Image (cartoon, rainbow, N blue to C red; front, side, top):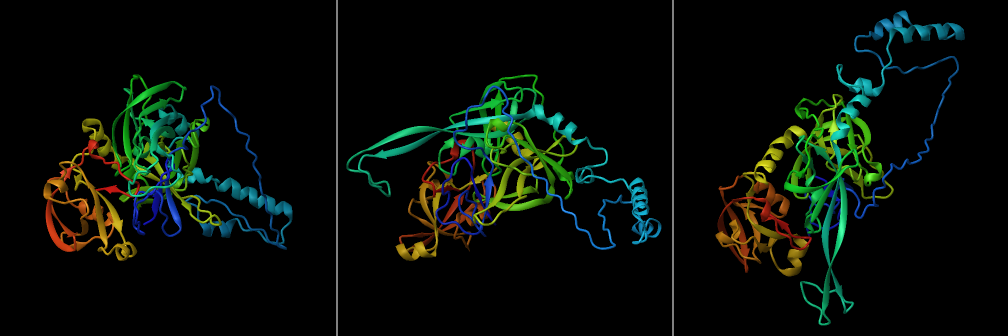
Length: 472
């Protein structure tokens, strides 16, 4: 699988990624999946809209071959190509007036349709009507994070937690990230992506403050009700009533080739409510994001930085997806376009319900460790086995209670070898909270087995360590 890269903060989530790892910063197969949060420190929003001048170049090409004319037309499903060639064909030597007459006959018999019309369902809304229907429910989200950094007086880099003898001054800066959200209820519940309000890439964690900008430019402070990094979904709440809520459709009814529209705030709020169009390119596309497997809607509708958490709607103006990621190339000479991804709304509904009711997703299993991948080269260098180096444990977590220690190397689970965090997560997620698993561990050169009773993940369980540490 390909990897994902978070737009808000660029950091290494996993020290030893593999092709199947879910890390925001490591490319695989020369491609990178980017979550589409907005830029850090966006420019302040101006009171009036800024109209950006766009210069469009129209390229027209005409190819004329002696005595022949080729025409390309969209044909109705019930139109017979046999009838077309038998009744509407013209002699290639006919006069231009005869050819024009035949062309007019064809145009009167065959209704030409645009791609949007062909991709829309028969009883759907027009594109402007679909956009107008959902636009009041589209909001901008601005999140502020405390970003610690160390100002070393010695001028040297100090590794492995070693302090400079000259002393270090730890300071904090505020980083701002922007995204998009969807008004879910008239009482002020708003859904967005988890990575818009929670940074696990660089370890900055939960946003210190979140504000919501409505389509009428009213601004509210928001509280974080809950978030789930496994599915990249978060729920916010603002103190407002009488809001226009979005209408939600059924993403299970989507068809490949169907028209979809993406709405969001690319590159910040100056382009608030930008609309792009495309089709459903694929359904249930499985990709790996930050060590987590996700099944997403693939679309060629452009989804850019700042669109995270915005709606992907169908031709009825119903939300059928939450915009989340796009794929880009790691080679400057290679361009990758038309590969965007959204979370299916039907899949998201159960997650959203749990976040509103409990603040977290119930039943998720947790071992309670923070670990670093040890690949073959690292293992050879330090004389240790390939596996997962346990860096720290959740206090009173499942692993600590079972007897796992920091410095242990997990080499397997239930007798099956694991070499990456992605593999351990995949095997762990086959179980539920309360189930017992066996961790196969190497401790000081001796192999031991430890039974661990999985605990339920709650929102307060998240650890923040170095960038390469990943909680399980």
